[in-house]
Image (cartoon, rainbow, N blue to C red; front, side, top):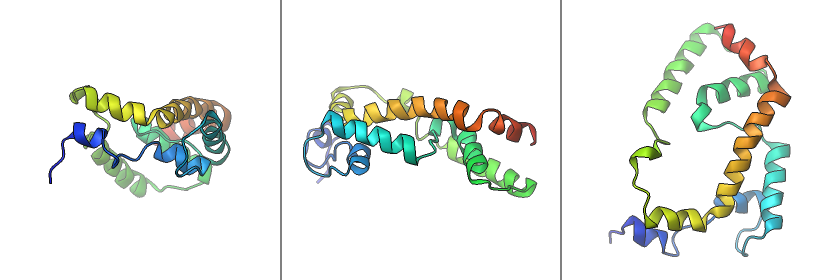
Length: 142
């Protein structure tokens, strides 16, 4: 049958902390601070972080990091595809009501929310440490 968001949020169907569990390899046991710290360490050492809210800049970072040489025609096509993705507004949470269901989901996923805050920090740090002005040079070449 149909299930409301409130019912889903309090059900056993809501998988908690998927990313933290994946990175820490703790699939079932209650998460500990050590699990969260391990997930942060894996994220820091093994990932170039991209953020949906900085989609275009993230794509440019991936291009710079992986050494992708993008031609002007591909860049134009890519820009259109990026804009179409942004227009979908997947992360436009301002229109959603914050209620008990969202509070319950946030509570059940507090380790992933902490990991996300760390990813935001890491995004800024990697921007300075890994890329410096490399991404800005890519932008001015367009």
